[in-house]
Image 1 (cartoon, rainbow, N blue to C red):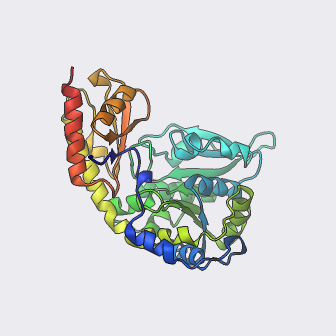
Image 2 (cartoon, helix red, strand yellow):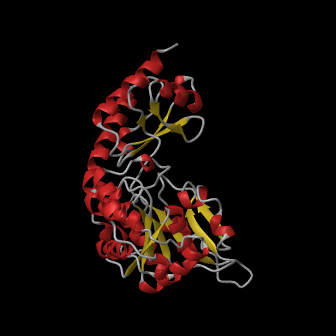
Image 3 (tube, rainbow, N blue to C red):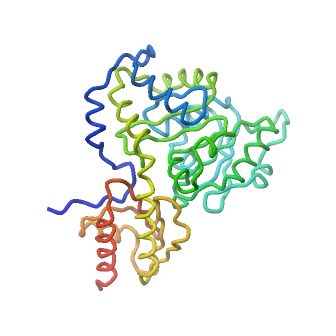
Length: 346
């Protein structure tokens, strides 16, 4: 039977044989006691790659982001972020439930918010107003179609926020995609942020896990909050071993995912009823409008399933497709054929 072509997300990647072997051979210890040598090596290596003092292995990107929010803020403050961002939309209001802070979202353009927009939302330091405790950016931006946050804009946000005494966190779940797309190192892309979270389990292909990076003092606080959120893990070196393979080997492969996404985008742009601007596809995520086809995304997704292609809508009119290392060029061609077939069916 034909394999499914899964374009729902890059979280669906399966561990490679090299990862499985590393997991089998991993040396382990109790990570709550900070005695798992493989976890310690992963954290040290991640900190080295990003030019940071320390890093913390966490089960998920959501936990990493929320630990960062808690580490930078205190109850009654506000967090400025982009309104379509992951922290605001897909992390279950944990910033309010766990950290006691309130989001103050800004509508961005392709996921980008500028300092000029941010500074108008910073609360005056009057005792009866909630104060701004953190600014959070996202790079690449998931719901903006994998867009790369412009470096000059990010640097200005960090510089001006720091002048105002406000820390800045980066949700860098797919920061290695941004690195490949721009040709800039992850150090250059992230050095001005006070903390950075990146995922091992998306384009890098590990089965689970993310890293939170920052100063040694920040990571010491973060370790406390990881435990408070139920993230204290034991002999987790079996997972860190796969993460090390992902971190060391897989960033170099991301350009293939980007090329496949751009190839698919060009084909979609030529199809009747579909609105797709290929020039906006910078990395491995595509968001395209199917309203002109007369279908909604639920029926479109069901039609794709009949061709053994999996993809989801993000609202009734817009589909999202994500390329990754388990999707090859011939899978992209089959997807293009499937969509042609759907559009030709009365």
